[in-house]
Image (cartoon, rainbow, N blue to C red; front, side):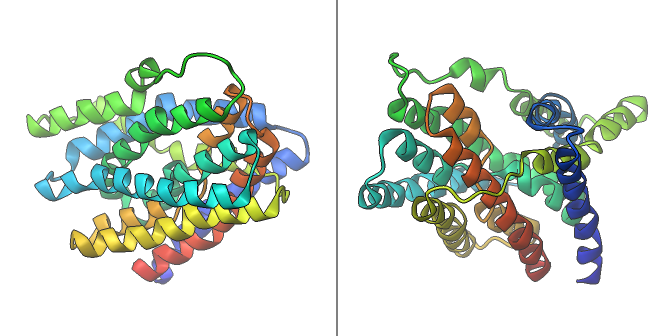
Length: 300
Protein backbone atom coordinates (compact mmCIF):
# COMPACT_ATOMS: atom_id res chain seq x y z
CA UNK A 1 0.00 0.00 0.00
CA UNK A 2 2.80 2.44 0.93
CA UNK A 3 4.51 1.64 -2.38
CA UNK A 4 1.37 2.53 -4.37
CA UNK A 5 0.86 5.75 -2.39
CA UNK A 6 4.50 6.65 -3.07
CA UNK A 7 3.90 6.23 -6.80
CA UNK A 8 0.63 8.20 -6.82
CA UNK A 9 1.85 11.31 -4.97
CA UNK A 10 4.41 12.44 -7.62
CA UNK A 11 1.76 12.04 -10.33
CA UNK A 12 -0.64 14.32 -8.41
CA UNK A 13 2.13 16.85 -7.71
CA UNK A 14 2.79 17.18 -11.45
CA UNK A 15 -0.89 18.11 -11.87
CA UNK A 16 -0.39 21.02 -9.45
CA UNK A 17 2.60 22.18 -11.51
CA UNK A 18 0.12 22.66 -14.37
CA UNK A 19 -2.26 24.54 -12.04
CA UNK A 20 0.56 26.89 -10.97
CA UNK A 21 1.60 27.51 -14.58
CA UNK A 22 -1.99 28.54 -15.33
CA UNK A 23 -2.31 30.69 -12.18
CA UNK A 24 0.85 32.66 -12.98
CA UNK A 25 -0.19 32.94 -16.64
CA UNK A 26 2.91 31.13 -17.86
CA UNK A 27 0.69 28.77 -19.86
CA UNK A 28 -3.00 28.22 -20.56
CA UNK A 29 -5.47 26.00 -22.36
CA UNK A 30 -3.76 26.57 -25.69
CA UNK A 31 -0.58 25.01 -24.32
CA UNK A 32 -2.70 22.30 -22.70
CA UNK A 33 -4.20 21.47 -26.09
CA UNK A 34 -0.69 21.22 -27.54
CA UNK A 35 0.50 18.91 -24.76
CA UNK A 36 -2.50 16.59 -25.23
CA UNK A 37 -1.92 16.53 -29.01
CA UNK A 38 1.72 15.65 -28.30
CA UNK A 39 0.58 12.78 -26.09
CA UNK A 40 -1.96 11.59 -28.66
CA UNK A 41 0.39 11.72 -31.65
CA UNK A 42 3.79 10.94 -30.11
CA UNK A 43 4.24 9.69 -26.55
CA UNK A 44 1.13 7.49 -26.22
CA UNK A 45 1.71 5.59 -29.52
CA UNK A 46 5.32 4.97 -28.45
CA UNK A 47 4.14 3.74 -25.05
CA UNK A 48 1.55 1.42 -26.63
CA UNK A 49 4.07 0.01 -29.12
CA UNK A 50 6.48 -0.98 -26.37
CA UNK A 51 3.88 -2.21 -23.86
CA UNK A 52 1.54 -4.21 -26.12
CA UNK A 53 4.30 -5.78 -28.20
CA UNK A 54 5.80 -7.27 -25.02
CA UNK A 55 2.69 -8.42 -23.15
CA UNK A 56 1.71 -12.08 -23.01
CA UNK A 57 -1.52 -12.06 -25.03
CA UNK A 58 -4.37 -14.38 -24.09
CA UNK A 59 -7.97 -14.86 -25.15
CA UNK A 60 -9.05 -13.41 -21.78
CA UNK A 61 -8.14 -9.94 -23.08
CA UNK A 62 -10.71 -10.16 -25.88
CA UNK A 63 -13.39 -9.24 -23.32
CA UNK A 64 -11.90 -5.83 -22.55
CA UNK A 65 -13.01 -3.70 -25.55
CA UNK A 66 -16.47 -5.31 -25.52
CA UNK A 67 -16.84 -4.52 -21.81
CA UNK A 68 -16.08 -0.86 -22.59
CA UNK A 69 -18.70 -0.76 -25.37
CA UNK A 70 -21.32 -2.50 -23.25
CA UNK A 71 -20.87 -0.16 -20.30
CA UNK A 72 -21.12 2.97 -22.49
CA UNK A 73 -24.29 1.77 -24.23
CA UNK A 74 -25.89 0.76 -20.93
CA UNK A 75 -25.07 4.17 -19.45
CA UNK A 76 -26.62 5.78 -22.54
CA UNK A 77 -30.02 4.27 -21.66
CA UNK A 78 -29.81 5.76 -18.16
CA UNK A 79 -28.61 9.12 -19.55
CA UNK A 80 -31.58 9.34 -21.94
CA UNK A 81 -33.98 8.79 -19.04
CA UNK A 82 -32.17 11.30 -16.79
CA UNK A 83 -31.99 13.87 -19.58
CA UNK A 84 -35.76 13.77 -20.03
CA UNK A 85 -36.30 14.33 -16.31
CA UNK A 86 -33.93 17.31 -16.24
CA UNK A 87 -35.68 18.96 -19.24
CA UNK A 88 -32.47 20.51 -20.59
CA UNK A 89 -32.18 22.61 -23.73
CA UNK A 90 -30.53 20.82 -26.65
CA UNK A 91 -27.04 22.44 -26.40
CA UNK A 92 -26.83 21.54 -22.69
CA UNK A 93 -28.48 18.16 -23.20
CA UNK A 94 -25.90 17.31 -25.86
CA UNK A 95 -23.05 18.01 -23.40
CA UNK A 96 -24.89 16.05 -20.70
CA UNK A 97 -25.18 13.00 -22.97
CA UNK A 98 -21.62 13.15 -24.29
CA UNK A 99 -20.07 13.83 -20.87
CA UNK A 100 -22.00 11.00 -19.22
CA UNK A 101 -20.65 8.46 -21.69
CA UNK A 102 -16.98 9.12 -22.52
CA UNK A 103 -14.53 7.39 -20.16
CA UNK A 104 -11.46 9.56 -19.57
CA UNK A 105 -8.86 6.81 -19.86
CA UNK A 106 -6.29 9.51 -20.64
CA UNK A 107 -6.75 10.78 -17.08
CA UNK A 108 -6.40 7.26 -15.68
CA UNK A 109 -3.29 6.49 -17.78
CA UNK A 110 -0.62 8.18 -15.60
CA UNK A 111 -1.97 6.43 -12.49
CA UNK A 112 -2.10 3.08 -14.31
CA UNK A 113 1.51 3.54 -15.46
CA UNK A 114 2.62 4.37 -11.91
CA UNK A 115 0.79 1.40 -10.40
CA UNK A 116 1.13 -1.35 -13.04
CA UNK A 117 3.78 -0.32 -15.55
CA UNK A 118 3.82 -1.65 -19.10
CA UNK A 119 1.33 -4.45 -18.43
CA UNK A 120 -1.22 -1.87 -17.28
CA UNK A 121 -0.58 0.29 -20.34
CA UNK A 122 -1.04 -2.66 -22.70
CA UNK A 123 -4.32 -3.80 -21.16
CA UNK A 124 -5.62 -0.23 -20.92
CA UNK A 125 -4.89 0.25 -24.65
CA UNK A 126 -6.87 -2.88 -25.50
CA UNK A 127 -9.78 -1.78 -23.26
CA UNK A 128 -9.68 1.73 -24.73
CA UNK A 129 -10.13 0.39 -28.25
CA UNK A 130 -13.82 -0.11 -27.42
CA UNK A 131 -14.11 3.24 -25.63
CA UNK A 132 -12.41 5.12 -28.48
CA UNK A 133 -14.44 3.44 -31.21
CA UNK A 134 -17.77 4.28 -29.54
CA UNK A 135 -16.56 7.83 -28.76
CA UNK A 136 -15.75 8.72 -32.37
CA UNK A 137 -18.83 7.02 -33.81
CA UNK A 138 -21.96 6.89 -31.67
CA UNK A 139 -21.04 9.60 -29.13
CA UNK A 140 -19.86 12.03 -31.81
CA UNK A 141 -23.14 11.35 -33.62
CA UNK A 142 -24.97 12.46 -30.43
CA UNK A 143 -22.93 15.68 -30.30
CA UNK A 144 -23.90 16.48 -33.88
CA UNK A 145 -27.53 15.51 -33.24
CA UNK A 146 -27.94 17.98 -30.36
CA UNK A 147 -25.73 20.69 -31.89
CA UNK A 148 -26.74 23.63 -34.03
CA UNK A 149 -24.62 22.79 -37.06
CA UNK A 150 -27.13 22.10 -39.79
CA UNK A 151 -25.30 19.41 -41.71
CA UNK A 152 -26.03 15.81 -42.47
CA UNK A 153 -24.88 13.69 -39.53
CA UNK A 154 -21.81 11.74 -40.57
CA UNK A 155 -19.55 9.42 -38.65
CA UNK A 156 -16.01 10.85 -38.84
CA UNK A 157 -14.35 7.71 -40.25
CA UNK A 158 -11.25 9.68 -41.23
CA UNK A 159 -10.69 10.68 -37.58
CA UNK A 160 -11.09 7.06 -36.55
CA UNK A 161 -8.75 5.63 -39.18
CA UNK A 162 -6.07 8.36 -38.95
CA UNK A 163 -5.58 7.64 -35.26
CA UNK A 164 -1.98 7.16 -34.05
CA UNK A 165 -2.83 5.18 -30.87
CA UNK A 166 -5.07 2.86 -32.91
CA UNK A 167 -2.33 2.24 -35.47
CA UNK A 168 0.22 1.77 -32.67
CA UNK A 169 -2.07 -0.81 -31.05
CA UNK A 170 -2.58 -2.64 -34.36
CA UNK A 171 1.16 -2.65 -35.13
CA UNK A 172 2.04 -3.80 -31.62
CA UNK A 173 -0.47 -6.66 -31.77
CA UNK A 174 1.04 -7.84 -35.09
CA UNK A 175 4.58 -7.64 -33.68
CA UNK A 176 3.46 -9.55 -30.60
CA UNK A 177 1.77 -12.33 -32.57
CA UNK A 178 4.80 -12.66 -34.87
CA UNK A 179 7.08 -12.63 -31.79
CA UNK A 180 9.12 -9.70 -33.09
CA UNK A 181 11.14 -8.20 -30.24
CA UNK A 182 12.15 -4.53 -30.36
CA UNK A 183 15.43 -3.84 -28.62
CA UNK A 184 18.54 -1.67 -28.85
CA UNK A 185 18.27 1.96 -29.98
CA UNK A 186 14.68 1.64 -31.26
CA UNK A 187 13.49 0.25 -27.93
CA UNK A 188 15.33 2.94 -25.94
CA UNK A 189 13.94 5.66 -28.25
CA UNK A 190 10.33 4.49 -27.84
CA UNK A 191 10.71 4.10 -24.08
CA UNK A 192 12.09 7.65 -23.81
CA UNK A 193 9.11 9.03 -25.73
CA UNK A 194 6.68 6.89 -23.71
CA UNK A 195 8.11 8.18 -20.43
CA UNK A 196 6.89 11.68 -21.38
CA UNK A 197 3.26 10.60 -21.08
CA UNK A 198 2.78 11.08 -17.32
CA UNK A 199 4.20 14.64 -17.06
CA UNK A 200 2.57 15.80 -20.31
CA UNK A 201 -0.92 14.53 -19.39
CA UNK A 202 -0.85 15.77 -15.80
CA UNK A 203 0.49 19.24 -16.67
CA UNK A 204 -2.17 19.54 -19.38
CA UNK A 205 -4.84 18.59 -16.83
CA UNK A 206 -3.60 21.32 -14.51
CA UNK A 207 -3.80 23.84 -17.36
CA UNK A 208 -7.39 22.76 -18.13
CA UNK A 209 -8.56 22.78 -14.52
CA UNK A 210 -11.07 25.61 -13.94
CA UNK A 211 -13.33 24.63 -11.02
CA UNK A 212 -16.67 26.34 -11.56
CA UNK A 213 -20.12 24.96 -10.81
CA UNK A 214 -22.45 25.43 -13.78
CA UNK A 215 -26.00 24.00 -13.80
CA UNK A 216 -25.33 21.98 -10.65
CA UNK A 217 -28.23 19.52 -10.95
CA UNK A 218 -27.31 18.49 -14.49
CA UNK A 219 -23.59 18.53 -13.66
CA UNK A 220 -23.92 16.29 -10.58
CA UNK A 221 -26.20 13.87 -12.46
CA UNK A 222 -23.77 13.59 -15.37
CA UNK A 223 -20.85 12.98 -12.98
CA UNK A 224 -22.84 10.28 -11.18
CA UNK A 225 -23.69 8.55 -14.46
CA UNK A 226 -20.09 8.69 -15.68
CA UNK A 227 -18.24 7.83 -12.47
CA UNK A 228 -20.86 6.25 -10.21
CA UNK A 229 -23.02 4.16 -12.52
CA UNK A 230 -19.97 3.48 -14.68
CA UNK A 231 -18.13 2.01 -11.70
CA UNK A 232 -21.14 -0.10 -10.67
CA UNK A 233 -21.32 -1.51 -14.20
CA UNK A 234 -17.57 -2.09 -14.07
CA UNK A 235 -17.96 -4.13 -10.90
CA UNK A 236 -20.69 -6.17 -12.59
CA UNK A 237 -18.42 -6.81 -15.58
CA UNK A 238 -15.56 -7.91 -13.31
CA UNK A 239 -17.89 -10.43 -11.64
CA UNK A 240 -19.45 -11.58 -14.91
CA UNK A 241 -16.12 -12.25 -16.65
CA UNK A 242 -14.26 -13.31 -13.46
CA UNK A 243 -11.52 -10.75 -14.05
CA UNK A 244 -8.53 -10.69 -11.73
CA UNK A 245 -5.29 -8.78 -11.23
CA UNK A 246 -4.40 -5.99 -13.64
CA UNK A 247 -7.37 -6.68 -15.97
CA UNK A 248 -9.73 -6.17 -13.02
CA UNK A 249 -7.97 -2.93 -12.06
CA UNK A 250 -8.10 -1.59 -15.63
CA UNK A 251 -11.87 -2.13 -15.88
CA UNK A 252 -12.63 -0.63 -12.46
CA UNK A 253 -10.34 2.39 -12.82
CA UNK A 254 -11.48 3.14 -16.38
CA UNK A 255 -15.17 2.86 -15.56
CA UNK A 256 -14.71 5.15 -12.54
CA UNK A 257 -12.67 7.68 -14.53
CA UNK A 258 -13.96 11.25 -14.98
CA UNK A 259 -15.56 12.93 -17.99
CA UNK A 260 -13.53 12.70 -21.20
CA UNK A 261 -11.73 15.70 -22.73
CA UNK A 262 -13.56 15.12 -26.01
CA UNK A 263 -16.64 16.53 -24.27
CA UNK A 264 -15.08 19.99 -24.66
CA UNK A 265 -13.81 19.26 -28.17
CA UNK A 266 -17.18 18.00 -29.45
CA UNK A 267 -19.00 20.86 -27.71
CA UNK A 268 -16.82 23.42 -29.45
CA UNK A 269 -17.11 21.75 -32.85
CA UNK A 270 -20.89 21.32 -32.73
CA UNK A 271 -21.79 24.56 -30.89
CA UNK A 272 -23.05 22.93 -27.72
CA UNK A 273 -22.92 24.46 -24.21
CA UNK A 274 -19.13 24.89 -23.88
CA UNK A 275 -19.32 26.57 -20.44
CA UNK A 276 -21.17 23.55 -19.06
CA UNK A 277 -18.71 21.23 -20.82
CA UNK A 278 -15.68 22.96 -19.26
CA UNK A 279 -17.28 22.83 -15.79
CA UNK A 280 -18.17 19.16 -16.22
CA UNK A 281 -14.64 18.18 -17.26
CA UNK A 282 -12.99 20.27 -14.52
CA UNK A 283 -15.17 18.96 -11.70
CA UNK A 284 -14.61 15.45 -13.03
CA UNK A 285 -10.85 16.01 -12.81
CA UNK A 286 -11.21 17.15 -9.19
CA UNK A 287 -13.22 14.05 -8.26
CA UNK A 288 -10.87 11.83 -10.25
CA UNK A 289 -7.85 13.10 -8.32
CA UNK A 290 -9.54 11.88 -5.14
CA UNK A 291 -11.20 8.69 -6.37
CA UNK A 292 -8.69 7.08 -8.76
CA UNK A 293 -5.69 7.00 -6.37
CA UNK A 294 -7.92 5.72 -3.53
CA UNK A 295 -9.37 3.06 -5.81
CA UNK A 296 -5.92 1.88 -6.87
CA UNK A 297 -4.83 1.69 -3.24
CA UNK A 298 -7.88 -0.46 -2.39
CA UNK A 299 -7.38 -2.72 -5.43
CA UNK A 300 -3.62 -2.86 -4.96
